[in-house]
Image (cartoon, rainbow, N blue to C red; front, side, top):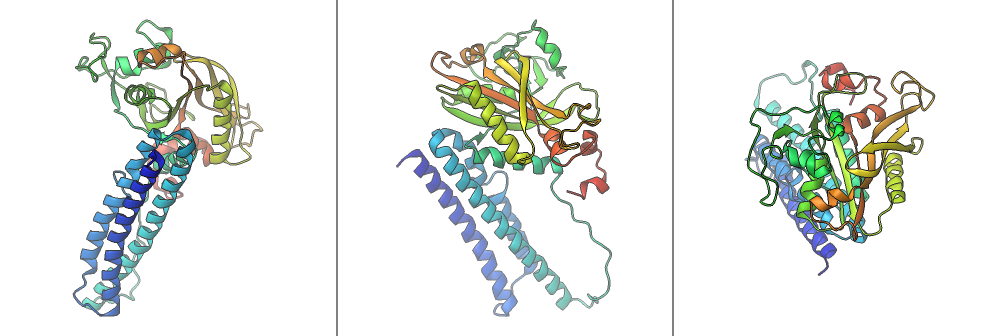
Length: 380
């Protein structure tokens, strides 16, 4: 059995188990609705449903955990497997939403039949919360990259200096450190995460990660190429809040390591992502830049969605918004993780999830994402 067949088999098994659990709850609900079983308790069924939902469609569900295993497949199989994973997850979410609405109705009916409360009396408007816009954006971005054949990888928010800087070709005296105004922790030294990592106090100084690039180092240390992965997560910098910057923000970074990867592959990937996520009217462009972990390096910009490229306050009148950085992986980075740069090549890119939400929904000021203003949040 090939790796793809084994992956699809496990996906089918997880899908089948989830549907069996859901069907059991649905059958009990039907029995109660038809009067065949008066002992059916809608409240108890709702509790069972919530347990099922967490177990089979939650963040740690078997279907969700398979996202990380996409990286083990070869590139030709990864896109098909990613599309099937998205289909199965969407089907389970749709069925869960449908049954959840039926359970709410059943509980209301039970209350009405067992209570003397006049249910025809007008009630106050209820307020139901929902997933925050940033989380929605992160989930949508993950789906886009899974559909492009990438796996999802995660890592710790507290990192060592080695993973956050040195392994990425940014030694202690490198002037590029000024790009990352870092939050260091008082407990400055801890044991190494991997047995073969440097043991000096400088390398093991603790900090809040300034980007999700350390996840790339963890991934390359753990998996052999080819690698196609993205790493979403929260990062921390001493940025002064303004219309386009906040000190605690969310970032997603991508890494490709394979044979014969070129800068043209990078440019095509950025454009493909831009049009898939923002729409056919939004495009990308690259301009030269410097990053110590890539060479050559570039910054990529997209058409300003607020003014459609005509120029406004948010884009400083240029018609373009900087989304992130990218470039070909520096050979020094490969050597730090034991990958031969003479055999393998690759590219990396990274951008802000919050910035994507700002552009997708034409938000003039990014700070509204942290304001917790209900008038703003209920629009999404």
